[in-house]
Length: 106
Image (cartoon, rainbow, N blue to C red; front, side, top):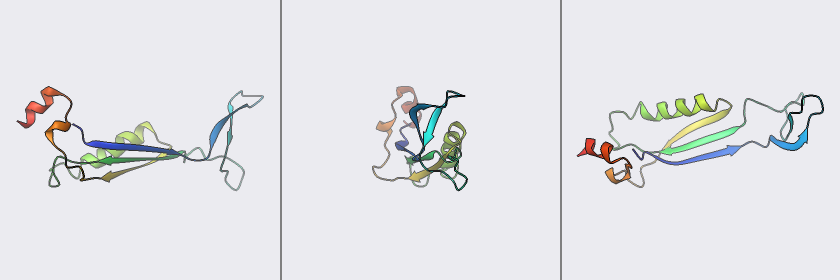
């Protein structure tokens, strides 16, 4: 429906290098380590979604942003996910790409 304006994915400093562990052959992680020296696997980065609604008074205003956040969080559990409501530019029916779906709003 054209409600998602932007998705920004940022990764923490922990990244895989070209080096491989000699026993497991897994990539060696470099970057931020906790006090015990381990790279955190639970905080890989963040995903920020800029999204709008069809109108500010949309009846799904309580549901859609949370549903979008939950759907992304399920796919990327190691990332912090947030949804930012954006009202500029104002949503119009022209933002819908599917012609059949546009007919619902006519």
